[in-house]
Length: 471
Image 1 (tube, rainbow, N blue to C red):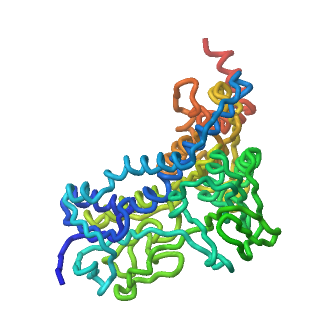
Image 2 (image 1 turned 180 degrees about the horizontal axis):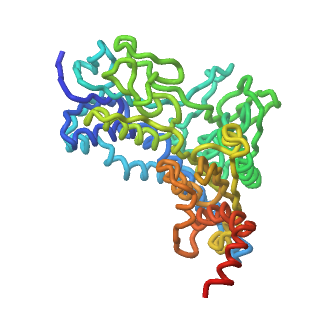
Image 3 (image 1 turned 30 degrees about the vertical axis):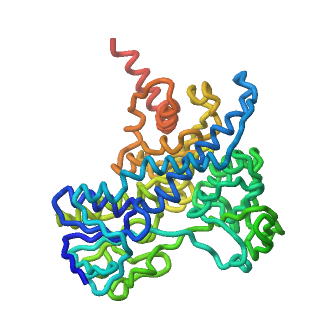
């Protein structure tokens, strides 16, 4: 058995683990990285990257429908579903070298392509190697959760890990789950020519603001997607090409089935008991600094529970690097973490939703709304469906919700404001190029101040005084 001694051992080669490994080795630490599956993790291979590439291909197909208001008639779109999937593969291939074994070995990381399991609080076995480390970072991510629906084990079905392998377009795709993955795949497949039915046991976009999510739901329905809410799947039956999902709202029939009901953390291979680490089905138990009960071991990203997004894993990497390499106090926060669903229109959130903010702040809360149809750029480009809503307490934003074209980009300014505790006046003071969609952010900040300026008796008295006595 080969033994390796190192400063930092990273278990998992997804976005969080790779960020830790790259940062630590370039600052002088000895680093070993374990990855038993694919470098780049879920995001590169099965999640963020392939889904956005497929949505992009679907958007091109959808655009062939034309726009009568702009004087553009429908074209003749020839959709090759298999070729669209090849495009997805090519996108992954272009990004993969950045996350490759060769690149990280070139940085000085010792990469072991095997799974790891704890054999003691400071030792992890990977194949025929035992790695001893001063600090260990668990970044094993999550996998699709497959619910125990009766009949499911007897039928072919897909998850986000397998749907991108499909090369023959589904005639009718049944999707169980109305979260971001399910809804993005619903719109992508509808625009690529499939009939689509989304079956959700509660409400779609359950974590988002219902006022804004309703705008997306209506758009998807207008495109021909059947969305059935409060329909708990009770059983599935049939065979490949002829599938029936029986729910509390009746039966639904299709040719293919995609499960998008959530994620489960990847802890089963780790033998966490040997390391004295507490965990449950939601993730590894960590403190505010992302440390486990075993003070030598950290957990980051999906496996640490909480928000399961690639950018969260990257943020966690920065937190633990400060702690491990420099001995500085570092805590992970959640209030400034944004998320986005990349449907058309996009749906994004950072901080508190309106309902959450009202529950916390009550009468102290101001909610400011601006519709996209007040934006000159939105009008000029025909992208007026959408709105922004900002929750403000004592002049500081505590949350922002956006639905509309480019919402995933627009939310960034509010994430910065929350991360740095900025006042909304900082947003109002921006000068932005005209015309841009970004002006919507400045417009909503201005809408917060408008009644305070234009409806204030004191302001009117002061202006009159100045005009009367100051030459």
